[in-house]
Length: 301
Image (cartoon, rainbow, N blue to C red; front, top):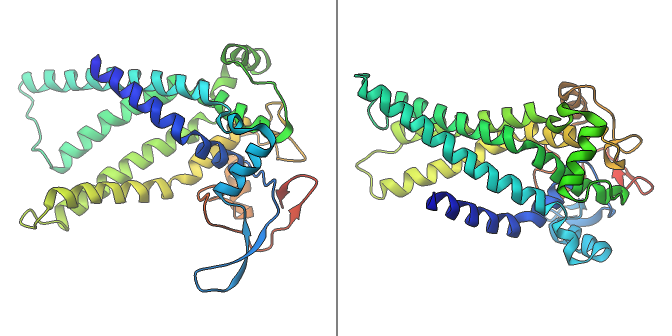
């Protein structure tokens, strides 16, 4: 229990520090571009049209809402983090207990580092993460809607309790899980890609006779995790869009945004427009080829 509380406190601190970054990332994901592009240069010195990056975007938010504005949606996100950490810990512990019972029941435990061991551990982690994601998703959804209110200057989603009431009254129980499926797919695929790819590298590329083997294996896990997150990013993007789609906020309604019947329709629309990686980078952002800036809608089309 003490370990779980420590994880919750550490996670809460990291959440507070990283919240402005997530806030700006979400606004970019939904296509809000309050600042026009500027002329800059790429690494080769060639002139390019650049979109405002993290710091320019943050300065714009502070100018409108003050420094506190950078932490819009923080409270429900803290709830999600704390509850998610607790649920993940309990489910993971239960999975470990079930695994121990199977071993005691004469079922042979796979060798550590083997493919079967990796599959077993990844399966248990997938179950724990999925349970945490499903239970905390309503808080995640409210977090995103609190952030997207910046676009239309609404105050529809303010307090956590009143936001829950609003969602239930307007959309019912299913409204709390808008965008859940692509979010789960993002988490699950990212986990499996990362762990299996890291296993292949650690088994067939890194030799135990090499110096600093432990550091190399840790590095491979980090690199494969980054690769997996980039590969599955479109699912995370679609999840964010579906969470705010047609919810009564300007950022999720025409003419600012299209209304998607399902997340698959959202995926197809983004794919046609070449926007599957929108928001993946918040530092160096080049204006997409063929796009124009609409000053009235604060977006590109």
